Each structure stands twice: as structure tokens, then as C-alpha cells.
Length: 486
Image 1 (cartoon, one colour):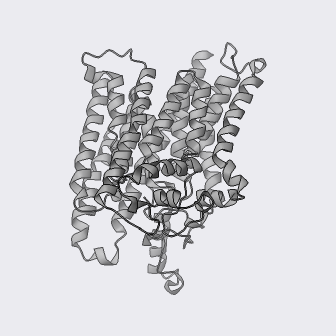
Image 2 (image 1 turned 135 degrees about the horizontal axis):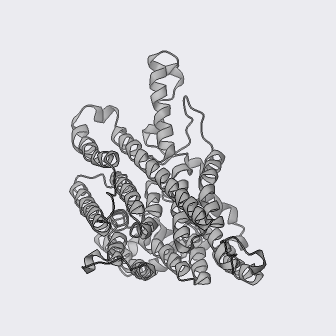
Image 3 (image 1 turned 120 degrees about the vertical axis):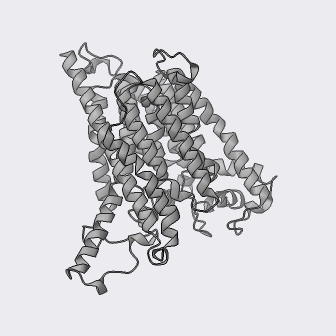
């Protein structure tokens, strides 16, 4: 809501400087203009929400406007899902429309649990943004490359987190659009390279970037905009650790610290009381393990996405290969990125939905990633009235996901093995402990971060497993294709 007030009440030159509240404008300019447009509608509901000083203002008219605006902008997401369903191969036989791959995909996307709670309870516009991404994916699958490139370029200037998947888009467009033909063995036909196509893609990127960043470049404020978009001083992890590699790394550091204190290897007086488990968002130094810098996370992310990008370049396999690379780029960036928010897991879960209805192996990975990733979002809804809501919605979506995909691949082997099943079942006692048992103990006052830590670390194990399993699956598939070609 504060962004509505900033863009409506202040001149353009102050948008990225205003710091009245902690919710400073830290999205790219297109989203700022989007908020500016919404503010001119919001003033007819309650003009007080557009006053910068009215922090945490929440009148009934304000809440109604937020709900209404989220629902209205979700129409783009609905259209994008429709276009994605058109791209799905519907040759798999189904006796009932409820068992058709396109219907299952539509439900998995439209009723996605994570997107539902993030947008319609937190009043964010992720559905609108994911709609742009899915629509760009659909256009690339339909070989409407310039439209797909334009949509993705616009998306990047709405929310820069989509840079996570930019390598997949760049390589796929270069490989499939700029090279117009392949040799018989699938390798590149270098003479087919089209300078015209490269120029057109370059023009799209430059024009969109100029439209977005141009006004701030003229004002001499581009460094300030960039500093807001990439606030490296916020620290390695969010207040609630995203369930990624760094959550495991932090937990290991804490475990080693406790062990070191018990064995008198460490001096307790030299260890700061406010640690990374204090829930604050700022820079911290690890106690035992080497501290992590933004450059280190960038290098780890680059190394993690490299195999998927190589696979897409040398064995593109059409839209399927692009989707695999997109999901792996999103997951790799989530695993090793700097100051990753837990909501970023949706960037991998949603496109993986398109793969889940194509192969049983992908469906199994989807069930692990979606169940674990959605459970990791539970701490976002922390009030007592929200507890039954999030549990019921999670159960409904999870039961449908398992039953529909199991029915779709009923002639194949089970989607999950016994170890994966046990891991997912253990989420139930973890939730009972975190939400019911722990608040009744005296530990609640001394170690309030324990439920968040347990949730983050346990979910990090599942997400890491899904990431590795998907990588192995993709690499195995590429090797199999190559052997058949030979």
C-alpha cells in the first residue's frame, strides 16, 4: 500500500529515494508505474491510503480495493494458463474430462496453493506477474519468438527476480530463433545464423529497457534505482531463512557453534547474542564456517545453472528442453542466490506443472517440490485465525495433486518411492510441533525462532533433493537421446 502512496503523492524524482517506512520501493520502474496507475483508481475508494505518512493504514475500503485489484489483474494469469493448456500434448487417453492432462494442468496452475495465499491473503500481484511469464512460455512453445521475448523483457522490468530464469530464455531464443536450421544429427548449422533475428531481439531488449529506465537515466538516478533493486546489505538470508542451501549452511554453522561452546573450543563472550536466528534482516558473519559474500553466491549460482544451459544449447529438445532448463535455472538460483525470499520457490513450481503432466518421473519430482515448497510458505500466515485456512487449502491442493497425477500415470510405476513418501508424511508431525506443541512450552520465550528454523531446514532437504533428482533426470534423458541418435 505504501507504494501506492509513494507513486501517487511524490514526484518521479523521489520515488526511489523515499524512506518513510521500511517498505521502500525496491521493484523495477514498470511496477512503480503499475502502482501509479492503480493509485488513480484507489483514490475513489479511500484517498487516505495514498498519504505517505499513513503507515499500515487498513480501512475496509482499502482492503476491499486491494482484494479487487488482485482479482482483476489475475485475469492475465487465467488467460496465460489457457494458452499454456493449448500447448500441451493432449494425446494421452482419458475417459473423463477430469483426467485429461489439460484439465489437470489448469487446476494445478489456477488453484496453486502458494500463489493463492501469497496473492489473496498477502495482497500481492504475483499472479499477474506469473501470468506474464507463463504467457511468454506459451508464445515460445508456439514459436512466436518475438512475442515471447517482448513479454519476458517487460516482465523483467516489472520484477527483477525473473532474472533467475533469464539464461534459459536467452539460450533458447539464440538456439531456436537466431539459428534457423540444424544439421541431421541435431547439431548447430552455423551458416543458418540470422543477424536479422539477433538484431530484432536486441531492439526489443533495448527499447523496453529504455522505456523503463530512461526517465531515471535522464534524472541521473540510475545508480539509486539499482541500489534499491539489489540491496546487498540486507544479508545472505531473509528474516525467515528460505529453504535452500544456505539454510542448511547456516544450520550447520549454528550446530558447530553449539558444539564448540560445549567443548570449550569457542569463547562465548566473543560470539554476538544477535545471530542469524534472531529474525533480523541485516549482514551477519558466520561463527565457525566461512562467511558468504554476494560474489560467492553469484559464483555458486552460475556453476549450478551451467549444466542445464549446456544441455539446452547442445540438445535443445524443443519446448520441453526449454522448460526443463527454466525450472533448473529457477531452482539453482533459489538454492544459491543472495537474500532469497521463500516465495521464490513458486518460480520453479509453476513451470514444473507443465512438465508434471507429461512424464511420470517429472510428476513425482513435482509432488515432492510442490508439497515441500508450499509447506515452507506456512510461516507467512502466522496468526491463529489463518491456521485452519492454510492447512485446509494445503490439504485440498495436495490431495488433488497426488490423486490426479496418480490417475494420469496409473499404468506406470508409483510416482514416489517409500523414502520420499516417509519424508513428506513427516511434514505432518513437524507442523503439529511448530504450531501446537512448541507455543505451549517455555522454550517459546527463549528460542522463538526454533519453529522457523526447523521448517526451513526440513524443507531445504526436500527442495535440495528435488533439485538434484530433476538434474539427474534431465542429464539422463539427454544421454539417452544422444545414444539413440548414434
